[in-house]
Amino acid sequence: MKPNRVVIGVGSNIGAEENIALTKEAIESAHELVKASSFVKTEPFGFEDQNEFTNGAYLINTEMDPGELKTWLKNLENKLGRVKTGNKNGPRTIDLDILVWNGVVVDNDVIERDFVMKSVKELLPELEIGPS
Picture: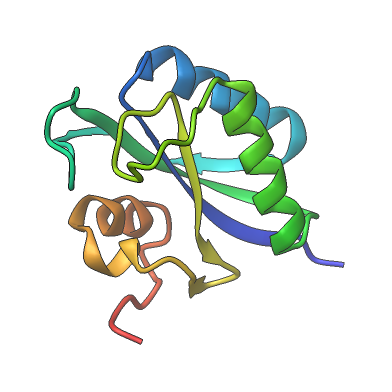
């Protein structure tokens, strides 16, 4: 069976350098890391009174199905100290989202947020991205 090819969005604004490095190590230990995008600094969105974010993405091959991978990513966020608050745009140690699954954009941020689209295009330049 062919593995699933997935783009995972990665963002942090609390200990970003360390948490992104730990995320990469964890992903490499459980999945095949094909490629990493560039990581860029971005201004906070929706809640401005916080540090800027560092954002990028990883292209992986995984044997997990979408539900398994989502659970695995949420467990990794928890392990790295992510605390969910009422503010979904608040500060975080790490934020991991499935952006593209086997060539299909599955997260609206890819279309709505320019830096997310740039990360995806860097990893999958052939991917057609547009409003669904």
